[in-house]
Amino acid sequence: MGAFWTRVGISLLLTSCAPQFRDQVHDASTGPCEQVISRHGAFKRDARYAELSPGERNYHEGQVALCYLDLRRPEQAIEVTRSWPTNIALGALLEARAAAQLDRPDACRASLGRALDNGFSDIDSLFAAPEFRSYSHEDWFLNLASQVWSRSGSVDAEAFAFKLSRWSQQELLTLRLVSADTQRPSGEIAVWRGKIRKSEIDRANGQTVLFAEGVDVKENLTVIDKEVTAFKKVHGGITPEYAETRTYESSFVPNGLLFIVKYGVIDEQLVSLENFIAFGRYSGRYADSDVPVLEAFFIAQQRPRERTESVR
Image (tube, rainbow, N blue to C red; front, side, top):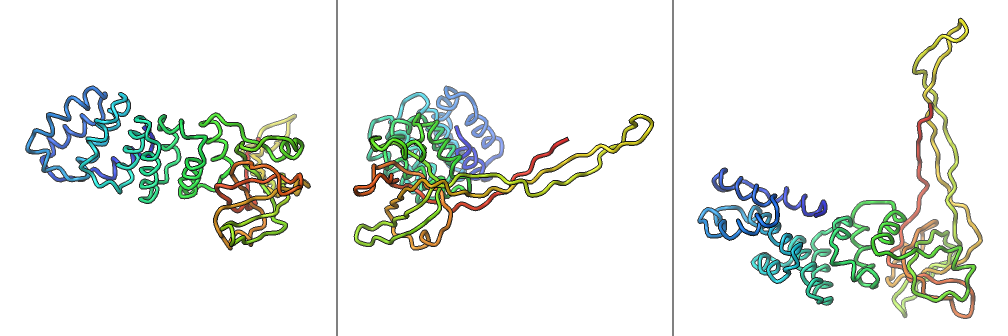
């Protein structure tokens, strides 16, 4: 079901009514879908159900709605969550999945927007919903997924792009390939690293434009630490055994491949970046040149990173 649903459930479980009944509801919520749905009606007819906290009821009803979605019964899922405030992330996510099953893309998009507005930041749970895959090639969904990722706290933008690529079954277009293929049609998704050579704030078109040179990531060995872990006898003498730890630091090496990034937001902080990574859609060439253009869904700063490995 995804970590988001589990975390929401745990955070909502409060104590309020008779512990025995509360435990029955909770146990039924974690069983097979047939059990979850069949026992839901009985619970709602029990007077003690009204004594449960809103959080406890929402947790149980959330599991019921998820089961209805798993069984492809979206109308029942919507009915279960109809009494909830629609501006909470869990309800909005459930409504979005139901709308997708009903082939209502505008309603799905609106519900996902409400989820995002109310703090949704679990990219794995977004990808865990199979209904959203039908929108995975659309710009609005790619932009929303990028926003969810940016709130997740992850610093690995490339990992997100590769995960989205695998999930949506779209190949990522490399900067090296598009630079060599000047007749390549536009439309593919890509994640490119670069160093800003020039930048513009285009207020007339409400966008930030970065003129960049591509960079390759190179790892440099910076530190070798050795620690004695044991001694052994060799040819009558004592020889120490070591555990070695190597530390590498990444650097960004310009590769001469020029490209342009257009970001549909005026962001004055972007112009001060040095190295960056951008995820977006390849949109053709710039003006009459051979320089490829990326219409970005997000742009993130790239900083050198350290990596350690143990060698024995």
